[in-house]
Length: 323
Picture 1 (cartoon, helix red, strand yellow):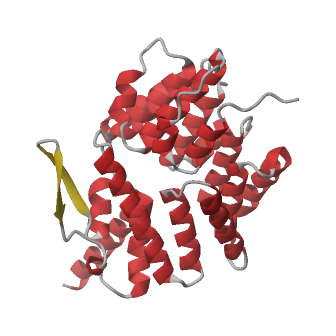
Picture 2 (cartoon, helix red, strand yellow):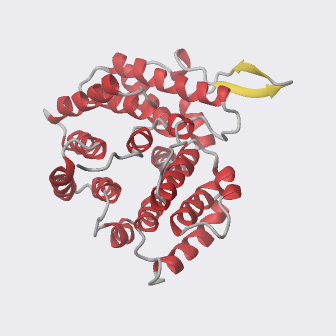
């Protein structure tokens, strides 16, 4: 009889974007040393996902195990553009060390960082051999970024052979179905719907359902789902003010696209809240900022922001040539 998986709930919360639940329910007894390190890695990655980079940097010291050092490196990389060069240099050094270079968490973090850098071939150099479900799922994401759904489907088949019902297998299946499009969109929607019925509703699940709705032309339904996701992000910030950023970039980006298809200004339905602490209470100030402005301010490196900026620059150059 197989031993119970003591970290199943924690992993599942993390995979589905229930980061605060992962943190709150991380006190799991009777863990081995290896499981304790994995638990701590998932908790700190949850803090990173919520934008609390400095907390992770401060709490993981130089004596921590390699997986935790890798997570700290990810927090440093994401915390400031000024840290990227140093973080990547350290990452290359660690990956070249025979003693730790093959650590699966280190390889996973390498894949995440190089994917952020859009250096997909470099990312695959460390992730493509797989070894864990997270590495296989990351491979699928990287191949989709490269517009190679055929290679992503090969990764999915590997994951299905390992565990067809695994949360990451189902997520990868949904991502690939969205990329393939057509009749596969309905299948992707049903996967996200199944998640929403079984588990806590999260921004990740809501965004997944919303993107499916947009693909199917149901933009009103998509808008409702995205606004729910945005409200969840703001609520997290209200309850846990040590998080640096409650503005989920994917929700904002999807809201921008949705508003364009609905043919109405974002300001008609979106008034993002600006929160500030006042004498231990929160003053909620409504502001007329549009989602694209919020996205530019809070996530200037987002793909949609870069494409928008490039288009604006091209337009300005065209105007100058005929002026």
